[in-house]
Image 1: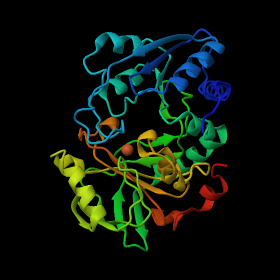
Image 2: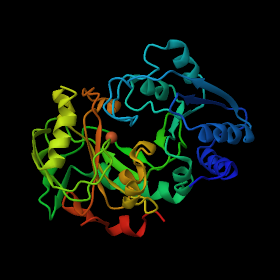
Image 3: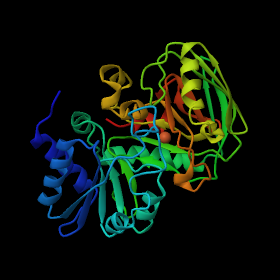
Length: 351
Ligand code: FE
C-alpha cells in the first residue's frame, strides 16, 4: 500500500534528525537503477528542509548478469564504486551518505567510513520505512544487548528442531544496527534492530537445523522441509534434507567458492515492530527482508563474507538466515529463550 510523500518526508526528517544532520552539512544521495524514486525525492526534500547541501550521485548497475537473484545483497563485494575514484572522492568529502543502492561489503564503503563520513542504507519499500522509523528507544535496546554480546566469550544456540552449535567470540567487533547514524564514521541500515558479531575464524562447531518457517535470503520464502547444516571448524561441511536443502545447495554451488560456506555474523533480533510474517505478504523482489532479519527473538546468522569487519573472507555469496524458536545463550546466560527475548533484553525490547 502506498504512503504519501508527506509521510516519507516526515520519516526522513525524523531519521536525519536522529542522525544529527546539521544545517550546512553536505549530504550525498547514492543511487543506481534500482533506487526507489519516492525514497529518493523525499530524501532530497527532507535533507534540504534541514538546511543540508545535497548532491545526488547516480551510478550504473553492476553484478546483475552474475547474480542468480534480483536481490541487491545476493552478489556482493564488487560495486559500481569499484575503481570509480571521482565518485569515491565526492562521497568521502560529504558528512553523510544516504545509500539508496546498497554498497554493503565493499572496500569502498569502508574507505568512506574511515574518513568519518556516515552512511545510512535505506532500500526497503517506502511503506516499510515508514512503519519501521527508528527511535532513541531502539538505540537503547540495541546498546544494552550489545554490551552483553561484547562481554561474551561464547555463544551457544539450541533448538527443539535439533540445532546445537557453539560460536567462540571475541576476535571481531560488533554490529549494532538501530537504524540511524549518530556518530562520525558510523554505518547503519534503516530499518533494522539487532546485534551481531563474528565468531573467531574456523572455530564454530556443531549442527544447525533450519526448521519449517525459517528463512534464507535471497530466496526469501519460508522453508517447508528441515535443512540440517553440519558445521566444522567454522564452515558448513554438509547440507542435508529434502527439497529445501537441495535448493540451498544448488544456489551455493553456483558460486564455486569454498568461502561461501563459512559462518559469518551471528546475533539476534530486537525489533518488536518488525514481523516474521511480513515476508509472506510481499513479492520477494520488492523487499530486502529487513523484517525477517530484525524481528524480536530471532537468531540471525550468515554465511559468506566477513571482510567488512577486517576478516579475510571476500566471498560474493552472502546468505542471511533468520531462525525462529531458538535459545541463544552467552556464556551460560540465555538472551533468547525459544524465540523470545529474556531478562533485560525483554524489559528493554523495542516497542
Ligand atoms: Fe549478512
